[in-house]
Image (cartoon, rainbow, N blue to C red; front, side):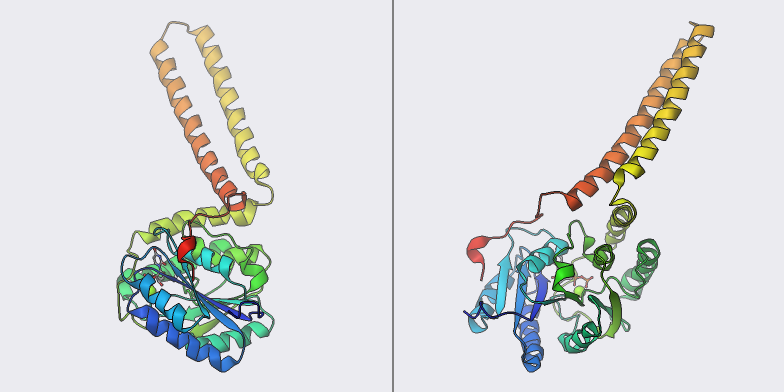
Length: 317
Ligand code: UDP
Ligand code: MG
């Protein structure tokens, strides 16, 4: 074991049912990184694959001790797998990429050079993306525009998994839900200097994409969370407090109005009052739920509960 040596570069790859891709990719990463003559490790995170992915990874670890494997007890999703990989990474620099050969390891050296120019994050930009136009590229372009305008992090392609980070930054980023798409925005909150670089992109040759069009809706919901983080993370009470106070003020006025109405026209039309009160209750409690949800999001992101995944410790390689 050469674990005691200081590691310069950790490459983190989340994989879910990628049995054909994994051995090819692993070899490619070794080929590229060996040439750099720097200490490195590859961390493959098996996100509960149902095919032979884990068995193959375990075998690869036998050949190359620099290839490390984290195995999940179930399928917790790409964000969780990436978070586990970042957690396990000990390199000064952390590279993230997909495990399906759509990203190209040969881009890594150029990205490392770019990072050395004084950045904390170098994000890949799939300038010539090889995915379906209608169901992938167009929704992704639109989503990217919205994400950029809301987060203020101007990138052509926030969705590209191939990214290079400085350790200090990525260790601070907490991922859950499908927040891996928003890593640049989360890094920005931590004060990162971010840049981008055009990278290669290949069509998927083996296996299937793990996502469909419903992802767009989940991304939009995550976006509202991110927006909240970026604007109000430091003082949520200002945000919630002012809405709460306004709501209570309106509520009090309404109650007062109804009270006077009751005195003036008592028993004239009692049904109307019951209806109004019920409606009023619904609106208030509905509002309360929204606020609670937003607050819960903040707690999840900043709270003490660290992980949203469970690692299978016995199968760690
Ligand atoms: N992935 C994962 N867990 C999941 C879904 C995907 O670890 O639940 C991995 C997958 O194996 C791949 C990467 O995340 O390495 C990106 O997934 P995919 O290629 O399906 O996404 P797409 O390129 O179609 O956006
Ligand atoms: Mg892919």
